[in-house]
Length: 309
Image (cartoon, rainbow, N blue to C red; front, top):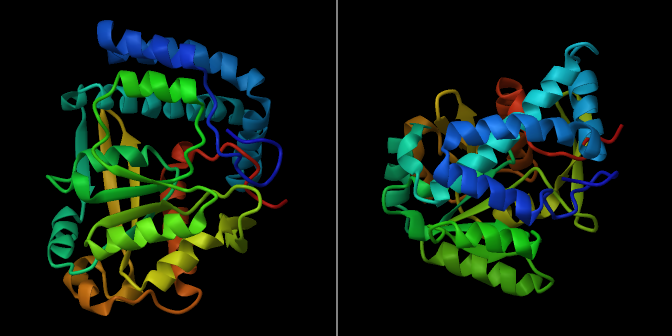
């Protein structure tokens, strides 16, 4: 979770001991017990994760315009669902994925689209729900998925997660100070007709950004993701993964209309190979993200001061 500014710091909250405790509970006591324990942990987070809680207060009071009386309960629910997605990710990584169900919208169109691709393509997602879980359910395509991420998690936490999980089904392209190397890895993946996934709703201080209205207020978004996607001249699809009741996740693909990659004509995107005008990609992404956040307001997990006001 973030600090008191308008950018994310590249690290997530939570200690290695906490992760280890949840791994133990999941393995030996079950998911429901882990959720029950989580309900107590959330009470700690509300006052002690002050910056994150303050950002959620602003989100519910001034962006979603919820009442002062209901906002504390919404903040509690927000933290709880966030914790559930982490527990679910640990459980699926440990091989307990049979408990979960996945509803995938436009999945056939997506696979048909991928099957005829001569070059790769880009997906742009967001920190809504648990986007990493989508990579576990692509019917044999997992080894052709590349996720571009800022690998700044605490090493102890990474060690706990890695030691209690199966190998990741996807490949990671780390964002480092060697920008040229990162771009070359992305280009190589696309040349091999693979999928390269970005997140379009976070940036760290020092990165180029652009401003745009989002949920009624002005916000900053990372410019590099969209600039790179445009310069690669490959089709772009938006990808969101949200949690639903009863151990269910829904995966939504939003095809870019201006690349002729709509659900009805996804196959034509391979020959289109364009990303539209200079601003249409950004506008389309923000519109898609706003639609998802309004439908799943408690699953947008950017815990820092996102808006400029």
